[in-house]
Length: 179
Image (tube, rainbow, N blue to C red; front, side):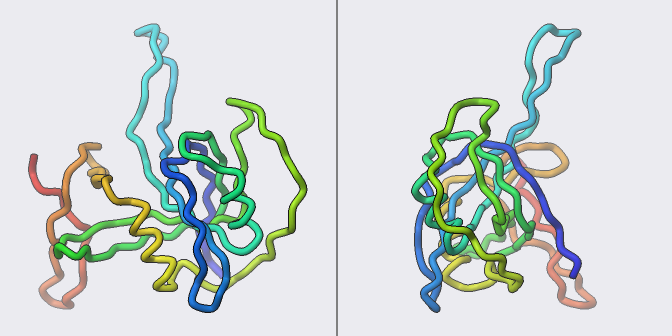
């Protein structure tokens, strides 16, 4: 099976939200912001790149442990399956959400100390858990108040309706409104 796996280092944007799928499986949803930083020797100062936001979902025991362990603002390392989801908002604008189906989550110990308590083991699950309606609505709720970043310019802005391929009716990449 071809899947994209990603490891992201960043900060928790919002307190995790523990919910259940229609089938009763517990899951937690939260967002992580990751901003690359480097030291510019010529300027003698640290510089930051554009911030990327990721919607993270964890299931079962990992969900319960993440909910009990993570708080807004804490540095984390998230490892999991990557998915990019395009959706239409209630106001008919289009959005793109980068989602991670977490397989492992931990505090970034290069920035602090954590107190670990043994819990239950998370079981692997191969089906597309992020596709469930209850999971998508939880992910949408975690991203309110965030603009979309233009991948070319790095500017923030609201989305316009994405253009459609006239021949096939397919949605192309969403475009930002000019500032």
